[in-house]
Each structure stands twice: as C-alpha cells, then as structure tokens.
Image (cartoon, rainbow, N blue to C red; front, top):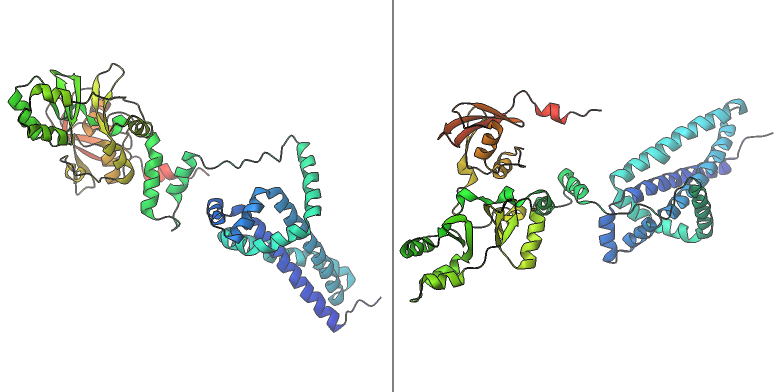
Amino acid sequence: MDTQLDTTTLACYWIALIFLLCCSAFFSGTETSVMAVNRYRIRHMATKGDRQAVRIMKMLRRPDRFLVLVLIGNNLVNICATALTTRLALNYLPQEYALAAATFGLTAIILIFGEIAPKTIAAMKPDFVARKGSLIIALLMFVLSPLVGLLSKLSHLIIRMFGVDASKSDNSGLSADELHSALVNEKGSVMPKQHKDLLLGVLNLSKISVEEIMVPRNDLYAININDDWKDIQRQVANTPHTRIVFYRDELDDIIGFMHSRDALRLLTRDDFTKENLLRAIVEPYYIPENTSLLVQLQKFRRYKKRCGLIIDEFGDIQGLVTLDDILEEIVGDFTTSFDVDIEDEIEKQKDGSYILDGQANIRDVNKELKWNLPTSGPVTINGIILEEMGDNPQLNREIPIGDYIAQITETDGRSVIKARIRQNPKKTPQEDDADPF
C-alpha cells in the first residue's frame, strides 16, 4: 500500500497539525490563567461593565463547566494531532519506526509547546491571557453547551459516589489573617505603599490591646480638684494636653475629663469658680485593659467618646487612651504633641547597639528600629526589663529579652533610667528564617 502523500495533502497535514498544537496551547493556557486570575480585580472590572471581565466571572461562577469544556477541547485536539502525526510519520519513515517516532515526538512537542510553555506564560500573566481568551471560550461554551452540560452532570454523579458535593465549593473570601499575609508579602506595584500601610494598620488593630498604646498611669497629667484654687487655675492654663483629667486626692478616684478648649473658655469668664468647673467636667469613661483597639474604636464611635481610662480587673487606673492614639496606629503620627519624640529616646552606638530611655514605649521602639521586642506585657523598656529581672535593677547587669540582650546603664535603684540593648549574637536571623524543607 502506498503511504506517500502528494505535496498539497502533505502541506495541509502540516498546517492542520500546527493549528491543533496552537489549539492545545490555547486550552492549556486559558485553563491555567482563568484558575489563577486575580478574582478581586476581575470582579471590580466586571462591575464597571468590562465585557471581558464579565465573561471571566461567568466562567468562575461555574468552574466545573469551564473545566469540562477545556478538557473536551484539549483531548479532542490532542487525539486529532496524534492521528495526523502518525500519518505524517508513515510518510517519512518505515512502518516499524513510524509509530514509535510519532508517539515520542508528539509527546515531547505537546509537553513543551502545548502544556509547559503556555501554562508558564498564563501563570505569569493570568489576567492578560484570560481576558484575551474569554471570547473564544464563551463562543465554544455556547456551541457545545448541551455536551458540556451532559458531561458536567455525569461527573457530578461520579463525584457524589466519593461523598463530595460539587455544588458546595469553597468560594469564601480572604480571612483577616490571610489578607494581612497577602499585603505583607505583596512585592509588586499593585498597591501604593501608603495604601498598603493603611490597610495593615487597620488589620493590626484587632491584635493590639489598649494597654499597649496607652499613656501609663505615671505619665498622666491630672489635676487634684482639692488642690488650692489658684494652683488648679494655673494647672488648667498650662496643660500640655487637649484633655484634662480631674481626680479627688487619689488618682483612682477620678472625677472626669474636660477638653482644654472648654477649660480655657471657663478661665476667661469672671464667674469661673470650682463649682462651675465641676459642673463642666464630663464623667469618666472606663475601658478594660485587654480590650483590642478595633473593639475600642467601635465603642468610641458608638458611645460618642474620644478618650477613656484604662482599668485593670480590680478597677485600678492603669493609663489613658484617646481616639487620636488609635488613629495614629493606622495612619502614623499626625497630632502635635508635647511628648518626647521616640528618636530622642534612642541613641545608636558604634558597636550597633542602642541606648534607650527607660520610659521609651516598646511598640514605638519596634517601629523605629524594626525590632520585635515582646509587646504582650509591659509597655516601656523599664517595665519589660524589671519584669524579666524580677528584682530591683542593678547597674551593668545584662538581661536576655527574647532575641535581644539589655544592659542597664543608668538606674535610680528602683527603675531603669537608661539601658543598652543589642541583638543576641547567639541567635542569628538565618537560623530563624531557615526553610525546614
């Protein structure tokens, strides 16, 4: 039997084979791109009327039908390509070699040009590939809808035999932790850095308690209402804060707050007396010490409050937190303050260590130096060192604190005034970051 093809037929076979390989690459690439597409971006574009995005969203709503269509197309073109390749091989080689050459040759070609290359490109540019292929897929879905529907139902029946309900797919959105991880690891230019920092600030609110950002009890600027009236007037006039705390003899006996603007307005009146001052003071608002910033932000909004006193389980005053403090956790410092700047509390040394003020806030230190000092306990450097020591501070004593070592350089015998802190040389970042696999 003559196995030779004439020139015209041979050319048609080669053209058809190349076309089938292109179809195989198209189906493989489209499958990968649609499954890897950025669904949030595509959904956003679909809401704006983008036709390509609308078509992709229809595929994603019924991924089972889309995958059936792709498998039909891929298998059909690959089988046809196998038949053509076999016929071409018989045209050039003896029959005993033609089948083996066609099998191994076509397998290598399909793997490279029909699978690996298109899927790699689609994985790198999923949105672009999916958008370009959406029209062809939509047309094929319309033409082959009866066949796709039949095969999809059959596959569902088979899947149910294994106890899986295909109609209940996991299409839930990202959790807060997953979104946080996605933002932290996002290295491209999809989102401006300032936008990403704002989102991270909001997500972190649920992980931070009010006691971590509060103004500690010892640093509260409060006025004893039982002081001499002239002293009270002087303290009101010279207050460095927007809100004044008033108490009666003991700090735990808080009377309430007053905005400095209202206090100064009262000072200008001729009838400014202690009785008028007491009537203008707003009752205190108390916050449990373990309340998260996210919960407290919602409570401030619900109760129309802007500041509150942090109390422990015994009702003792621990500190004060304001709405501005919470907002600064999201957007960074934006208020004018008389507080000491964190940069003034940190002195870098030639050996790479840092001299820190004992009253420096741990969270502020971590932000400034990109450290990870523990924040679950005390809020100041003095507090965390004393907690680790369990004793009165001793000059030049070294104390391990997590991944760091603190050395007391100045003390008054009861508290740490200054301390030198450096990273623990025995624990290298490479050991922490090493991949166990």
